[in-house]
Length: 204
Image (tube, rainbow, N blue to C red; front, side):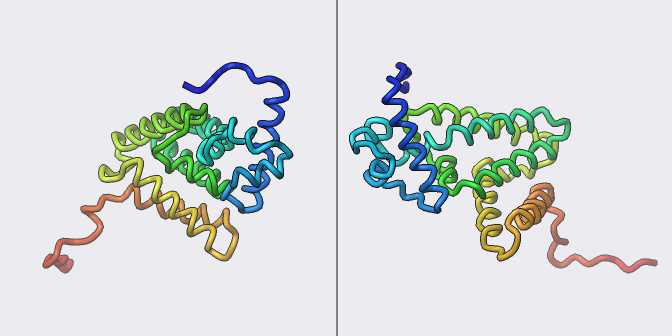
């Protein structure tokens, strides 16, 4: 379990400086998060950075705690929706918005090797809530039986990539591609096309 002992004021201040420098780096599009460089930008010793964030993954998770809390709230609201399809769409849109705003967050959602951090527990809770929502949508017939959580994650990542490379308004593109995705999730693959060799009879 993570160390829950309260930090000294100066230690907490140094940790916040490192996080602030990391956020600025990500906002500039630099997701490499070189810990030595962050120490320089934060004005702290390299040892201070490594004590708080021994790996890049640990730093990424610390940066993602607020994002995960917001997604947990969205997942709860989505589960409370009367219509499972609307709930699923709400959660997918929330995830899409976060990924468009924060490239580094995609790594946190995708990794299976969490650091021993508060974010790891938040991610587990979010994954469970998402699975509950997916199960509810599938049982209601709002989601194809052959689509699982990993499929949805990959498809949302595809929407993010398409929206960023659309050449126009990213938000409008994301909304349009999400609508296409939702339509596909509802469709029945058995009714997508007539069987080979069949032909509709002409009207009498």
